[in-house]
Length: 144
Image 1 (cartoon, rainbow, N blue to C red):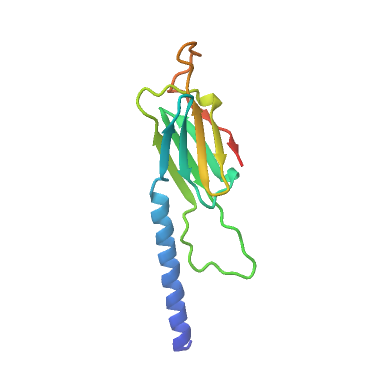
Image 2 (image 1 turned 60 degrees about the horizontal axis):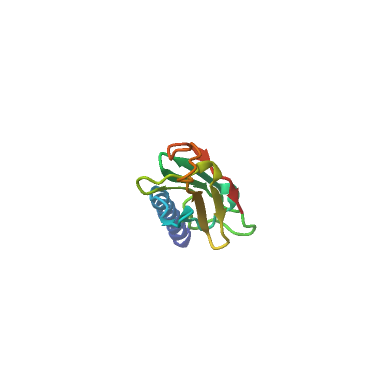
């Protein structure tokens, strides 16, 4: 083995380790989210770049929107993975304000082309009261 080959081998090893470490750091951080409110609903917006609708799971548990994203890397013919820096399994949680009364079963989740995941939770009817409480667990359908 030549000195050049040894140098390339060491370099490749360092790049892969740094990439894996960057990926693990990204996976350990919670997805960032904004919680917005209108008269009719709450809107929770997560940053979810590089995600497809089949990668996303959305749940409403204990007055919080919980998101799990399991991304997959596409195989690119003729290319070798040199720096695997993007996290593959990402989680996020956004708490709704105290006293928020929503209808989890009527919520929607939409993934935009720019990589935003928008979860809309309609508010319960304060006058009629439909019997739902904010402590129900429900899966939100995900639209592409």
